[in-house]
Image (cartoon, rainbow, N blue to C red):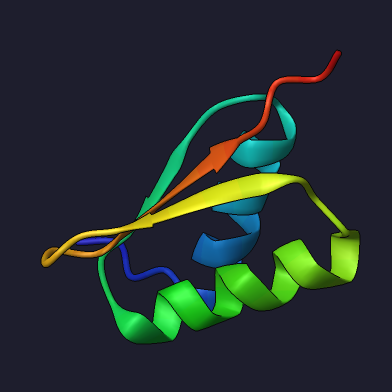
Length: 62
């Protein structure tokens, strides 16, 4: 089984968001890392929280 660091996983999910795809974070720690990256990169993202985790959905560019 391959173990991936949480920061690398967050960065991978940010790359997906930048490419126009949604990303899902299962844990609060991963959610916090993604939120931090989104803030630093000033990405326009909708966050939907569920009981199972958070979805990060990039807003469409005009």
